[in-house]
Image 1 (cartoon, helix red, strand yellow):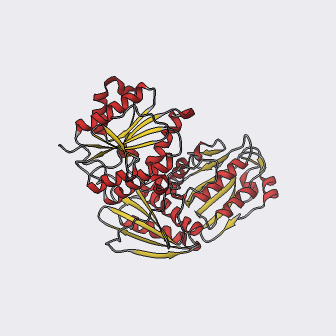
Image 2 (tube, one colour):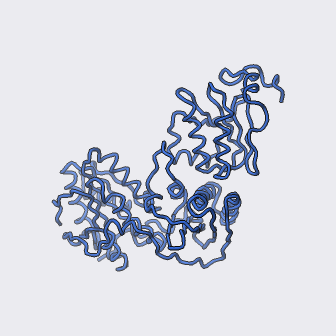
Image 3 (cartoon, one colour):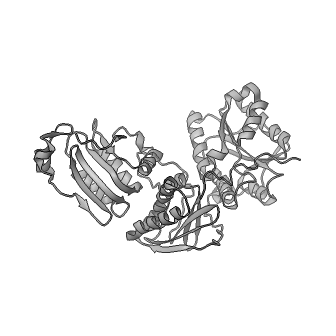
Amino acid sequence: MGIADRGDWVGEGFRIEDVVAELGDGPVYVDKQLVVTRTFAPVGLRFAGEIDMTNSHAVVRSLTTAFPTTGDPHLDLAALIFCDISGIRALVDAAEGLGAERHLLLHGLPHQIEKVIRVTGWSDLPSLVLCSCEVAQR
Amino acid sequence: MSMSHDVDKFRHEAMLYSGWPDFIAGTVPFIREGLQAGEPVLVVESPDKIDILRVALDHDADHVLFANMAEVGANPALIIPAWRDFVELHGAAGKRLRGIGEPIWKGRTADELVECQRHESLLNVAFGNGQPWWLLCPYDVNALDESVIEEARRSHEFVSQGGTARQSEAYRGIEASGGPFDRPLPEPGSAIREMSFGPEDLISVRQLVVRVATDSGLGVARTGDLVTAVNEIATNSLIHGGGKGTIRVWRDITKLTCEVRDAGRYDRPLADRERPQPRLSEPRGLWLANQFCDLLQIRTFPDGTVVRAHMRRDPNHNLHVLPDAKPTAD
């Protein structure tokens, strides 16, 4: 998909050219059970596969290096088959690390992972927003 | 009964009763005295006992908190967190409280009974050095084996019967209550799937659990729950148990069992039942496992730790919970 196809302005005030220039294009992380790619409309990351203790460090790294410095990043988790507590912890830490007034928006959260987030009480954190909507191509 | 006993610390008391009148005679004055002293009271009992207590207490029942033990304590490891919530929510500034909890009834399976007995001991560890409150644990002497009553004398500092409370000479004390739990687990009688795992094999562990759970008719949601539980237990082996472990999976008519064995030592007796603070990165694997399986059994032996997660195959056909909760006739 070319930059022109994505529209000039996406998400909450991100300019695609700026995002690509700053962060680069292409997969952010790949291993035998997980692929992390960027999304541009909205701006964020897409996780497909399984997260456990063997690759949650990569999730932490993807989350800390691939986000723009302003606005609310989106995560597309619809293709996430499994995520253990260390992976969820990575999401929580990333959300908490965004700073005041910023949020990490989780889309397409599979039911089991949402259940774990609720049981741990992390769903109450204001920085983590569980979106029931499908990932919007805005 | 010495109801006016001054509670200046946690008082864990087994109340041995025989039939409905004895149950009422032991519990209703205990509740009323607490209410009169302005103490919050929580009763965790079977629905039929709650009904009879409501009748016996009349208007006083409006001031008592009730909870269904079949729900709260289906997995006995979830009872201590429930009492913890009660003490923290209603016992601010060291306010005294009272509770009644009957975790052991005749219909408990052998596995559940052992875990309930461990739970009774761990209550001493969880609350023994904390604020003063009084927990009364009714034991139905007509329905329960003598060995169960004997264990109640070891897990409770006080035992009351027929209106008289005494210090239990058999009480094992707080420290021994939290000692390593090494009671042997029965070997499975059915075919076992077994595999060793290291850090790279977690995904295979999950696939094994999904396969057997699906074959056993567990359903998508409960299969997901079991996978979540077992993955955390196996992760514990990789982090705390020597970096590897062995999983065995088997089933019988009523349940599916996943067992994880490793070379680690499990030395935090409450780790699977103290709710972690959301903002702290405390270990929470075994606590989480308890939230997602029907029963968790943890044993520590000199050569390692064994954790078993049990799932009933048909959640609607609940063999264990309160089929037989009424006290037997005298």
